[in-house]
Image (cartoon, rainbow, N blue to C red):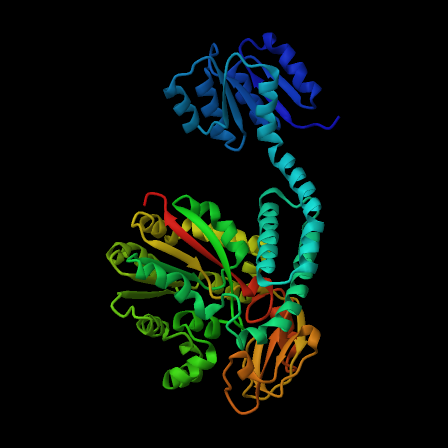
Length: 519
């Protein structure tokens, strides 16, 4: 029989519990019985103990004193206290001393077994069940991928795959992680074909899914017209799986509803985020704001410099010019912390728009730092790093305060990112753009299997930067590298997180609608 764990059972009447001990041993546990707190403390120091069952009322050292001594030296050992005393103060003392569970006498063997399983085996049991459930869902998801006919089907597929990614993060993948990764790749191959068939038609028709330019009109304006105030939080590079990983943190303070929309191409900030704030496609933006457009594209640091102007003008075009707007971009911890400290001053603003660049900065910083690459080696670690930041940064405290305002909060992104691993050589002149997942320039070409070639930008609502401009948009996990110092840059960008291309992770963008639980 497999050893399921070592139980130390502490009770000054331990001999009376012999039937219980035999029952646990019959279930595969190794049980060491002792009849004093002093012996328990000594054994916890001398041997490997997986869990302690501790009587509260004992001669000599009582249960609480024994508990505190054990936890002082061995804080990770789970302790289940067993007692006849149901007084609340005792429970609070035990909880304060980091007790794992609390059982009231008399206890039967089944109660003890369930309590021990919950501590020692629950993760394994849940992991086994998750693996079994995923194998059952695998064929269902594969069938959905092969039969996907519209964008709602792809939202559903993204949702399912993101759910399984989060489940495996929490419980382990039982060796099925690679199978899930392969299914993400299968989905992206199908999605790339879908975008290749539909995207140009969307650009020429009003019969299309929700795209970046419609976001303010669809979500923000109806709230304002009903007299409600709005907070728009846009986290650059936030993906569906990232948002799902944050759900527990966000749902502490908000009721949460999640929708999806499609980022325009390229899935990069100068295009998709400007489209959100302006309500215009890139070719329209170039025509409506010719002077600002020139300034934006002459200096890469100015590409998103005018978002506040674009947002105010979009509201004005739709008869909402009297609504007050405050726009704030957070690029550093210090600027975020300062915003959090003064957030109360912005309560009466009709539209509070906050752009947060943390996820994008994390991705770029990881590319440049070998230490960060070790800390964040894969997608799972990337999600965990984002959630750890969320838990400890200024944002969660700020959201807690906002949740009391009664405002409608929209929590979204402009695009996501994807981990790249397939270098593709691209030849271009000095005017060719520097993007890793997309490029524009003259006479750019790649094999079709690596992405989309756009020969006529106007058909895709994209600007012509010069005569004969064409675009390359990477698909799957491809990334573009110039021939010069090819191997150097392949090594530099390999397995980095990039955006600008065609993938579910980049194009299917989550839109969470948050309403404070107290409002």
